Image (tube, rainbow, N blue to C red; front, top):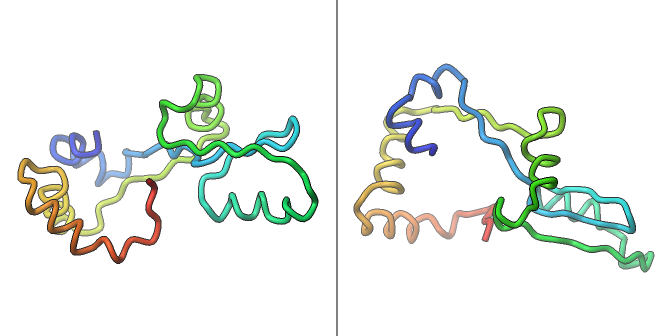
Length: 127
């Protein structure tokens, strides 16, 4: 969808009207209390010290929206009072166009070369 908006409605992005809803990476349950973590750091902070206290927790890792039930999706990603939105910005038009061509284009070899070249620089990989 991002490619569609970039290619066909770039003024929506340039005007600051395009946002991405960020779903959580984890659901953490301690007893009846449920929290959601959007980063690995939040998870470490929330679960820190649990081993020492002996508290039992359940951690569910979300790999995609399909792993959430409708109530969880509403609560974490769709509810306007709770959702986390990230505005899509274009800092460099030429560079953005190059990235979309390489990463979303029809040619596989440039995409493979890009991934191979920059894989060692990845800091936050969501597998």
